[in-house]
Length: 126
Image 1 (cartoon, rainbow, N blue to C red):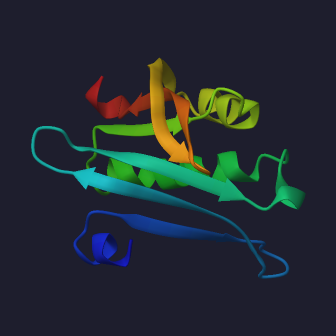
Image 2 (cartoon, rainbow, N blue to C red; image 1 turned 90 degrees about the vertical axis):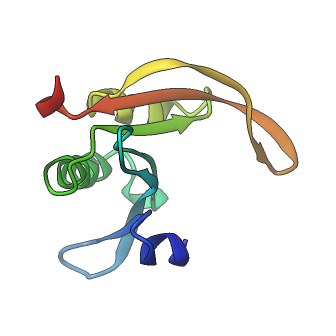
């Protein structure tokens, strides 16, 4: 990912606990495409002991706003495994809309796994 970041094709953000300074999560915007597409993919994770407190939603809302307002992107795409209910709820709360199911989308632990495809369009473009 370092090469993508250096080329302006990715951004990696780290989230820290304000009081303890401890790393609690991260997100990355990858495959940033310019030109007529103006889009990227979003990935995210948070430490288990910080799940369910709204922290990731707060961090992602700010990060996505930056991608739209400062980088001028039109679309952010995020994909998750159908059984990942937490990601589904989080993306829904952020305004992502389901676009479909990609069968055998990623090979995870040696097995091809389906993924739900979602996207969020820059409100300024609607």
